[in-house]
Image (cartoon, rainbow, N blue to C red; front, top):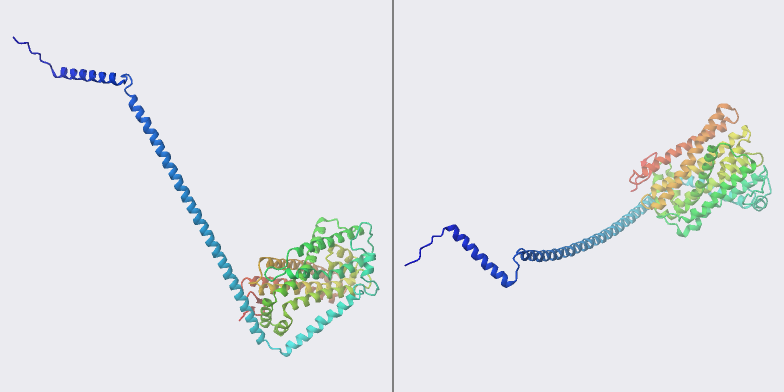
Length: 482
């Protein structure tokens, strides 16, 4: 007898297999202690460990990247420092090359000057010019200096001297001094004589002055109190005389113009020292420029007395000629005080005394002022300084060039202002009065020449930047230095 067979379908077999696997899994979990309700915790622990490892790996890579960046930055800084060092070495090399080129240019200029010196003969015209220069230059100047040393120069026909003036009129005009028509002229004459000492102030800096750098700044600081004292003294006199103008513009204009005149005299006095320091590079080009112009007979004389001798002689002639002019008009009246105030840069005080001068005497005074103040001082100094600017264009440095340009600029402003004002006054008097028409005409000619000198100076400054030699003559154009 056998048991009956049971047929099981495919689906039943699958269910039975699943039940057997589930039983086996339950038995294993029971033995190993893994709860059946948290089957996903094993995979979560594995994920957390993987994240921590990834984070640590990323941090390590970041630290390594930072170290690499720091190394790159340090390398770049070292490269930059090396480039800066190379640039500094190149700049030093360029500076040395420029200095060598400047020295070469200076030597070439000297060689050219020596060549010109050998080629400039002493003709009879040159000897004639030298004779005239000796007679009207150093000869007259020594005579006038002797008169000034006697102490009887600036006050014609009196026995007063500098010591008497100091006793009667102190150096500082205080509130207790009362201005009168007696002591104010004495004060003006005394100040005019003391002003001749102003060009000696730059000699204090002779040891510190060079051609390339010019005069040290402390000389200008010493000069500043002298300028302020001059303006303060004029203001005290005007206040004591009760003649202060009511117009603020008039006060500012004439005070500013007077200050510029005082500064112009100081800078003109400092110029011969600068010319002396640059004599080796200025004299020969200056002589070459004269040789190529209508003034060629003066070229040998310039080589003989040097450029600084020319500047010193022209300055001394201008200063002493103004002293002579004041002496001629100081015998009485108000012509002398008006002239002295004008020479000192006391423009407001000069206008006050000028109004008291009779009309018949104003023409001669204006003409002589235009001759001595405009032509002999302003125009001659402008021409000499503009020529010096071109001759030393490649030699002087920025500071020295600024000082020279400042002196030329002040001179141009003063010369233009006084020439225009003088022309207006001369034309007005020629049209309204009949006194001294010949003298007025001479004054007008001097003023026109002063304006032409301003244009001439401007042309020399312009062509200093455009001519290869930096020198220019109206008659021959750009100077050629062989």
